[in-house]
Amino acid sequence: MLRLDKRLTAVVNEVKGEVLADIGCDHGKVSAASLIGGKVKRVIACDISEDSLSKASQLAKRLGLDAMECRCGDGLIPLKDSETDCAVIAGMGGNEIISILSKGSKGIKRFVLVAHRNVVDLRKFLRAQGFYTEKDYTVEEGGKFYDIIVALADTGKKSTDEKSLYIGKNSIDNPDFVKYSRYIREKYEKLGVYADETLKKIYGYCMHKDDFKIKDVTDEIEKHAPLSLMLDFDSAGLNLGDKEQKLTGIMLAQNATFSVLEECVEKGCNLLVTHHPSVFGEERDLYSERLLKKAEEYGINLYSCHTNLDCCKGGLNDYLAGLIGLKKVKIADGCAREGVLPQPLKLKDFAKTLADILGDANVKYVGDGEKVISNTLICTGAGARDDELVEYARDNVIDCIASGESKISVALKIRDYNLALVDFGHYNSEIFCIDIFRAWLDSKFGDMICISNTDKDPYTKA
Image 1 (cartoon, rainbow, N blue to C red):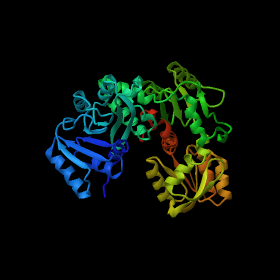
Image 2 (spheres, rainbow, N blue to C red; image 1 turned 60 degrees about the horizontal axis):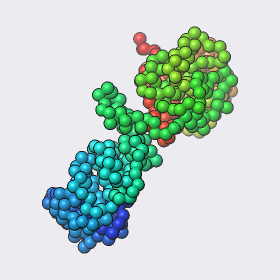
Image 3 (spheres, rainbow, N blue to C red; image 1 turned 30 degrees about the vertical axis):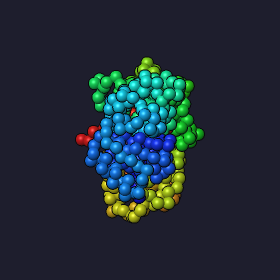
Image 4 (cartoon, one colour; image 1 turned 30 degrees about the horizontal axis):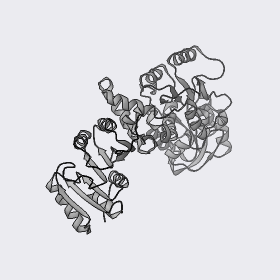
C-alpha cells in the first residue's frame, strides 16, 4: 500500500490531465499515487539523480505501474515539447524552480509547484512570466510549512493582488494558516530589527489577514461568557474604546497595567483583553484615570471579562475544578463550584496539592491539618472574603472552602464552625484566564493573539 504524507497528498490532489511530468521525482511516490488514483493516464518521472530514479523505477515495478516511465535528466530537458500537459516540481527551492522554468515550459499548461524556500521570489517570477495562479495555499507537515502553488500557462488571466505574493492566494481559508501565521510572528519577533523586508511583508499580511473589528473579538468572548452573567458590582465589557474600530492585534493578560499597555504598542495590538476590569463602577481612582488616559493616547481598546468568566460554563471556576479533578461538580453560591475530591485528602495534603497545581508557594490553610477533606467548595480570586460563602458551606455540609484573599473575620468564623479553608493567591488562581481566552479565540484570531510577558504576580515570596 502506498502511503503519502499530508504535503504529498496535497500535491497529488492538484494533479490533473492526461500525462504528468514528475520533475525531481525522487522516490516516485507522487508519480505512482497519481496513476493509482486515476489523476492521469501516464507519468514521466524525471530526476537528475540516477539513484533517486532507481528508487522510482523499483516502486513502479513493485506496484505494477507500466504507465510510469523514468527518465534521467535536469529539469524539463528530458521532455519533448507538448508531451505532457501537467507537471509537478517539488522538493527544491524557489530559485531552482525559477531556473527550470526559465528555460521554457515545453508546452505544459498546468504546474503544481512546491518551493521549500524563496517562495515569494517564485510567485513574483510566475506573475512576471504571465502564469495565472489558480491556487496557492499553505500545508503544515511535521512542524514545517509548504506552499502548494498551482500555476496555469497561457490563460490570459492576470493576478494583481500584492497580498497573494506574500501569503498565497488561498492561505487564509486554510486551517494550517493559523499555525503558519504564529510561526511567522515568532520568527519575526525573534529577529526584530534584523528581519528582512520580505519577512516584514509576510508578517504584516499574516497579522492583518482579515478586516476584523474589535466587536468580532468581544462578540466571540461573549458567546461563552455573556455580560448578563456578571455580578452587580462588576464593570466587565468594553472599559474604553470603540467596538467598530478595525482590529490590528489582541493582547491577552490578567490585568491592565502600564507595562502591558507598552507591550500592546510594541506588538501592534489595539485590543487588550483582561480578566480584571480597568475600572470598577462609575467612580475612578487616580490610577485608573491615568491608565485610561495612557490607553487612549496609545489607541488601545480595553475589554474585560470578569465575574462573567468566573460564573460561565467552562470559565475559571470550572477550569480549576477540572485541574483538581473534582467529581459531581455543580454551581454553588454565586460563581463558586461545589464538588467531591477524586479521593479524600487530609487538609494539609489538599493545601499542598493546590499549591502544586497553582504554582503558588504562599498557599495557607485554616483548620486541623489532619482533617479529611472530601466535599469541597472552590472559588477563584477573592472568594474567601465572602461571608455568604462560609454560611453556604456550613449549611450544605462542605468540608473545605478553597479560595483566596480571606479576611481574618472569615478565617475565625471558619475555625469556629469547624470548617476548613485553603487560601491561595488571587493572581495564581486566575491566570488561567489566558488559557481560556486563547482557547475561545485561537481558531478565528490565532495569528493575531499575543500573550503578555509583563503581567506577572506582583508579590515576591520573602
